[in-house]
View 1 (cartoon, helix red, strand yellow):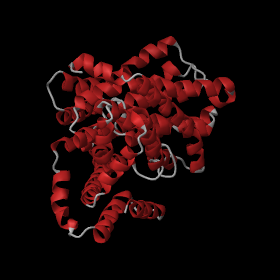
View 2 (cartoon, rainbow, N blue to C red; view 1 turned 45 degrees about the vertical axis):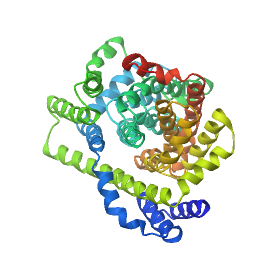
View 3 (cartoon, rainbow, N blue to C red; view 1 turned 90 degrees about the vertical axis):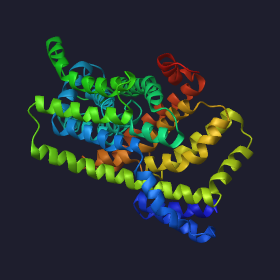
View 4 (spheres, rainbow, N blue to C red; view 1 turned 120 degrees about the vertical axis):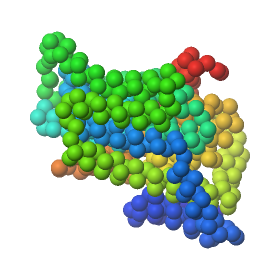
Length: 430
């Protein structure tokens, strides 16, 4: 049964069927072959329940927030400001790519939005400054993944929904790992450019006067981060309400910058609708597939098979890491989270791992899936911004950063308080 499901999944993905359709077709096929009752009759109920969750309203809000920052030109000014502060390092604007992704991640909830926004601003600099193109592209693809680790994050909202875990605690738990991963990415660029200075392109010269003048352009993302995350921990808003407040704050900033117009808002609405529709279709299809898998016994079968291996707490975790790295090569990230969490989460918690800690580790594994071929979404986002060149350049540049993600996971396994310390200190509890 499990073998049939995997073969059908891989076959459908191999012929480029959209991920949501793959999960829907797979659910219907498994129902036909392995269930004695028509499970598809519950589809209406599943669609309604999956699309009426209050917390999911945060998804279009965070997507819209990123769209407003991009269309209003605020993202361009943030990039220019960070470039004046970081471009003196070996690697120049590649550090600005990563730094801007980290700062944009603190206002957006989406890795795709982060990679696309920073990529649009940064890519022209490859030719102008003579950077090593694959490495430069890799910083954009990998830097974009920070969008789901540094709060606010759409993936944390989905994980909290699936596991009944506190989203505010997840946000706090993601802060230090997110900053650490940013530092790891920058160290990779630094090492590459120290070993081979030609990869770092022509240095960008900035005076202290330029740097101090640019600080005003960093106020916007910090203001939005304060509104979104600050309102949650001040007890003024839920994550969903905070996302809406973030959109309002972004609109105020766009109006202040005299960038608010009907054509701009039309582009914002179109981008938001496209991305939200894609995410919601994946969520609905994945919920139906999970329902079928649970009813035909696949979920319990996989859990028992993993437990029967008797690998222990650490061994099982290492096996799950390998499992997600392989699965991430073939599945879109949101669908991977929704599809696997129902049977993996009980195993992880049963072994004694903290559910908040696992939420952070799972998010990092999903980040790796965003930049591993052949289905790494951020790879295609960055490639779509180019006018020439093969996607192999983006893949080659992004792979070294996967090593940084794995290093962070091992660090979290050795020192769980890297993730758990801040939520414990701020919110109490064990």
